[in-house]
Length: 237
Ligand code: DC
Image (cartoon, rainbow, N blue to C red):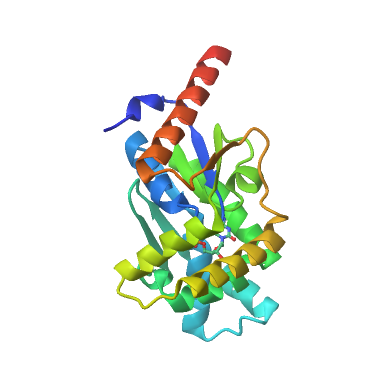
């Protein structure tokens, strides 16, 4: 089903933030497809820098080397509603940025203040060129697009997030121990909390606890939030 008519000619920016495993990527993509607008996957940008660092043998503990790396690579994003293609220095890295090795090194990139500054600037530039879009990450509604029309924050219990991750890993044919996944998520939450001054919830955000909701139910709630924002815009315009 398409709800493309919900987004008019004016630019509409929808941000979706939340912790690892809250279901952000899945629902952000589905929402963008339903509205027929672009999807900006900001995690892919941090992943792309980590991927380039691994390829060039950069020392991830060397802040200056990381900063130089982020400044020197050419990063291109193709933000279709259902896919994000990423090119690094002209090479397609869309699959390569999803490997475990890249996932492991990306936090070193994401906690680097200088790199965040570069990425925030780049995300705003990309946003200006996209027209209407759904942007997904950790800081989209609070830092990057604080004036967004709809700011969503997704939450879910640690157990539910771990369970979702386990199912994904099993589907990928990986061996998993649920306790390890819980420990891993807890550790990632701690790192994120340090970066994000405990989950920056933007003022006026719609907070959705997805623990007991299906993907379809979450997307329906998101559509409701977009509808409410559209009505408000029409009333004030
Ligand atoms: O959402 P993801 O798993 O693709 O994110 C990859 C990493 O990048 C993860 O460590 C969180 C971080 N990230 C971030 O710091 N800021 C964003 N806007 C998006 C992701």
